[in-house]
Amino acid sequence: MLVNYPGGALNTFDFLAKYPVKIITFEQTISGKEKKSIGHPNGKFKNWVGEIFHDNKKASQLLASRLFEKAKKKGRPLIVAGISGHFGSESAIRNSGLLAVVDSYQAELKQIVYAQWSREDAYTKTF
Image (cartoon, rainbow, N blue to C red; front, top):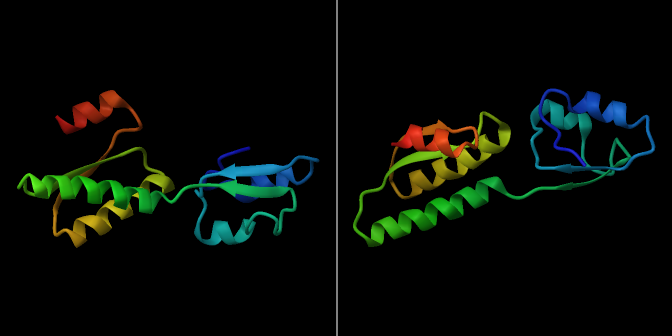
């Protein structure tokens, strides 16, 4: 089981294909040309048997929509600062979900800060 981070996917799969192991990946972190080079589970790499992931964009949209609805009910302006995890593809996808909802609610996005999954970082960057 592995999270296949961008930049080394093909090398990782080529290396693991030499051994009698089954591969299950977590998250969909690979995109574009790199994704084409590795394909999909049960494709080019027969030992890659599956991938487990959730829809980061949809999760972000649902969370933002619910928060915006609560703010609207309280008569609060929709002025937003996003807190993201790190500078990675999963965070970029979550950010795109937030941006879509910001547009649909005509909210004002001030910024998105990256807190590296640190409570302390998130606190100091937002207060």
